[in-house]
Length: 545
Image (tube, rainbow, N blue to C red; front, side):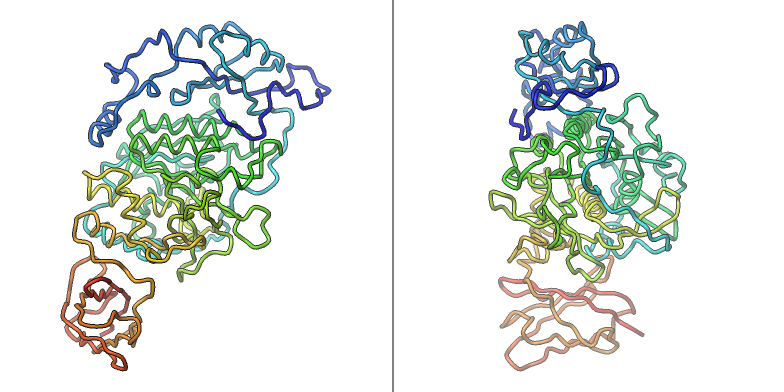
C-alpha cells in the first residue's frame, strides 16, 4: 500500500499524558495473502449477492482472488489480542481494527501473516478538522426541484417513465438524521426501496442516530425524495443502500477505509451506482495525513484506489469534485476520489449555468480533464432533515443530481456497462468539443446521452449555444447568424417530453437571419436542434399563446 503521511506505531508523536485505556486507536492491518481461504471462486454465491453476480455476468467481469473474503484463520489469530475487528477489506486484503493499546502495533507487525500496520485514527485528540467539510443548507424557502433536472434534460427520461425503477444506488455519506421519519422519504420505505443500511463510523449506534449530522439526508433527498406537487428527486423510484462512512466530528484516514468498506458492501449487494458527496485533501485532523496536489493522480489516495476498484466491478462511481475552487482557497483543486479516471467527478453551476466560484478546479495532477461534468450546485433544491424543502450550495448537491439521472438513463439502456454510461454522459455535455479545467465537459444533456447510447446520436454538439429570439416567442423564432453551422442544415424542435414537434430544412449564409414559423406549436418550453453534416447546435425557447 502507498500512503502519504505514513505513521507506524505513532512513533512520531509524543506520548500523551493519558493511560492507554483512555485513548482509542484504529489501525489498518495488511494481510500477506489469502491462503487456506474458506471460500472459492467456484461458488461466488457464498460471498456475493445474486444481483452482484448478475452484474458481473452481464458485463463480462471475471471474479479474481481479490473478490474472496479475507482468510478467517488470520482473523481468528488477530482476535487473540486485545483488539476489536471493525471490518475487513477483501479487495485490499486487510483488517481495520480498534484497540486501546498503542503498543499492540509492534506485536501485530511481527505476526507471520501480517505484512504491515498503518495508523488511521486516534480518538484522544477530540478535535475537528481544519476546515468545514461542506456547506449545509440554510434556506428554508419551499421551491420546486424541477429546474435542476430540466437544465440537464432529465425530465425527458422522467416523463417517458424512467425514474430509476429497478436500479440500486449506494449513498456513501455522513449522517442520515430523520430519514426514517420524514414524509418525503415515505415512498422509499413503504415500497421497500431502502435495501439496507450500514454504519461504519459508529457500528454500535443506531443507524439514524443524530450524532453524525444531516448531510446524508440532504444528499439522498436530491435523488430519492418525493413530496407530491412540491419536490421530486432525480431518481425518485430507484432503490437505495444508505451507508455511513464519513465522520463529521473529525477527519482521519479511517474515513477512507470506511469508504472502501462501503464500496465493497455496495458491490456485494449488487448496487449499480455509488454516489459519494465526499472528498479528501488537506483538512485532516492530523496534518501528517494531508495529501498534496501531486497525490491527485488517480492512483495514490486510498479512497481513489477504492473507487477505481468499484468501477472495475461494474459500478458507476459519481463523486463531488469538491468545494475548494475559490481563488483564496489554500487547496483549489479537485479532491480524492474525484481524481480517479473511472470516477465521474461533478462540479457545480448556478441556475443560470454559470460556474460556482467554490467548485474545485482541475486538472488531475497527471493532466486529465477534471471535473468531468457539472450540475446545479448553487441553491440546489432538497428536502432538509426537518422535512421541509429548501436549498443548499455545494458540489455535494450537484453530484446526486447527476447520479440520479444516470440511474434513469441506465434503466432505459440496461445492456450498457458503467464505462459506456460514463462516456455517453461526458460526450453529451455542453463543452464536449472544448473541455476545460473548471467545468470539464460541461453540463450533460441526458436526451443527447440517450441518443448516443441508442445509436441515434445527434452528431457533435457545438460549444456555442444557438441564439433564439424573440424568447419568449409567439408566431415565429429567429436563429441568429453565427451560431448556426454554415451551409444546408435540418432543424428539429422537441417539447420537454422529448417528442419531436416540428422539423424542416434551413440554409445558413452570412448576413441572413433564419426565420422559423412556430404558430402550430402549443404553448410551452421547447428545444431546437440544428443539424449539419458534422455538427449539431441547440437552443431553448418558450412559446406563448
